[in-house]
Length: 76
Image (cartoon, rainbow, N blue to C red; front, top):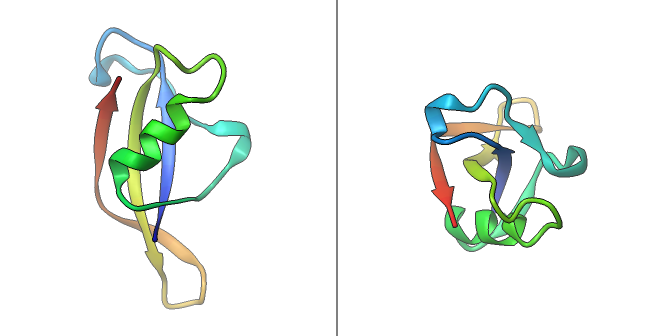
């Protein structure tokens, strides 16, 4: 499984989101794909109409993790 950072926001479109937030400070989520991570987050109470931005996380040179590449966006 891969690790992802899943953020959510509320707006009419992805470019209109003023602030992206994580679910209860959850900085990483394990899933098979970015879409699966977003779907799992969408099951959280109150996030049924949210927009989701997902980054893949990879190990960094200091033993931590960092965002990799461009985010993927999802709306369910």
